[in-house]
Amino acid sequence: MTGIISYGAYIPKFRIKSEEIAKVQGHDPNYILKEILIEEKSVPSLDEDSMTMGFEASLNALKRVNIDRKRIGAVYSGSESPAYAVKPNASIIGEALGIGMDYTSADVEFACKAGTAAMQMVFGLSKSGFIDCGLAIGSDTAQSPPGDLIEHTSSAGAAAILVSNKEEEIIAKLEGMHSVSSDTPDFWRRPEEKYPQYAERFTGAPAYFKHVVQSAKELMKKTKTSPKDISHVAFHTPNGKFPLKAGSMLGFDKSQLESNLIVSKIGNTYSAASMMVLTHILDKAKEGERILLASFGSGAGSDAFLFSVTKSIKNLNKAKTTQEYIDNKEYISYGEYCKLTYL
Image 1 (tube, rainbow, N blue to C red):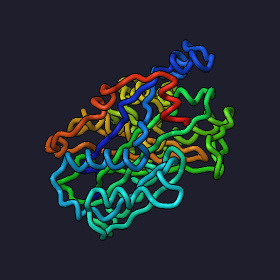
Image 2: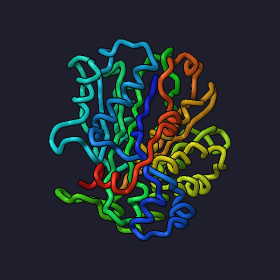
Image 3: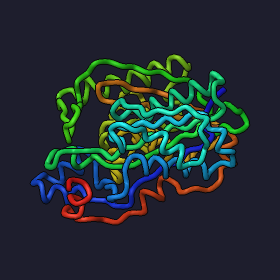
Image 4: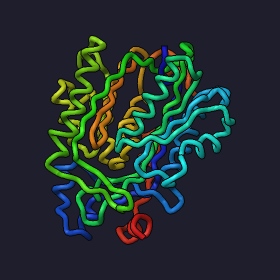
């Protein structure tokens, strides 16, 4: 057996409203609100990057449980905006958490599913018995070219999942995993390029929907579950519409997809996105509920997981919830946003 024993999130407090970006860039604010379902997004401060945010999310995960930190035998950090081009976020976070030196670590990159790829690695090491406890992180400060529509969505945030194979500690047991991958050129950034490029005609049906729907379908087939057996669904959230449409294609109703709508208040946190939705679900989850997570990474692929919530969810200590981070905000102007993002 393996599963989640704790979790944490982190979202910067600065926010910029979509209408503020639209006013400067000449976009139609009504289109952004109605077609993309993004009201505002998070913006990292000058001293915040994917490493510092990953540390904060990991610290929140450790606050929720009473464990010896030296039990952590793996730290894997997923990001497409690492703090260094050559030097891992993962080992810096491990050092800052004070877990000693006896652990394996690496940074992982697969666009927006790098965080869930890190989760798979840690689950595999835990289930095999090679480690007792492990930490998987998804964290990004997403880049977007000024004036592009993705400027309204690209944001910043981090989520961390603490994993163990000790049954009595597990709050959400892993029932199964399934992944799909393909060479689909929907979104990319070459070395030394400051901003990503994307082929818009590929971003929907051939990329996001094909991979997310297939990974979720295959996982439900493997685990002999159907949409009615699942209480909550966490999808990758590039905007507000895509997860709702994917859910509808799979037969889920709006009540099961509710937590995905946090994207409208924080934007697309890239490698943290589907994990962030999971943390929001776990903040309110009850024993016996089942949670389906399906991430998406451009290039392209999707990792799907099925969890069942255990009675141990009641034993977690208090830590700042994802909703508290969403609600703790300070609005900035486009000029201030440019200072923090582009200068």
